[in-house]
Length: 245
Image (cartoon, rainbow, N blue to C red; front, top):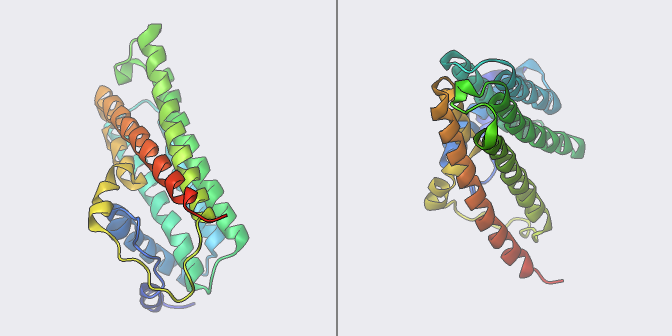
């Protein structure tokens, strides 16, 4: 088996461009994923196996939100599992590049898992609001309770459309000429993207023990996600409208 140190040295030269990436993903998640990729490489794991590890952590965390009564301890466990799942999500691509390139099936699996964890997490928050309304400061029954059940649905819609829209835009935009220099990443853009970075959003689950505090913080992230979606859609449509037929 290759050593972790050797894998880490090779991975430093096999990183994707930082363009369009938030500060959290650039300076926290990708470096964490690099160490996980190096460890996975040393253990002989495949990128698809690492993707499934990411799915296991993410889906287990989502299930815990739906099944267990909210508490501070649960919040720490859920955040840790989500953060690890996100780091392994970065690791699978880095491992694929380290091994000489990924496959179409591997890319497909990665995107399917990403979509599954997005839909599952917000669905489980909805279930939690329904099962434990008092713990989240929601009155049982009535218009208020019904209204709060719509919040995770709206957040889920914004998250999934943003994910799919961004993915499809990248597929439809003309590819840069081979050998052309990558555009320099913008620090301003990297900071601006922090509110819609999945890793930053996961921090809100540390507030699960706060009940109503979590509910309002989660709703706040949902509003931000909806506003960013509107901006992204306008930007993507404008960019694709400029592409020649």
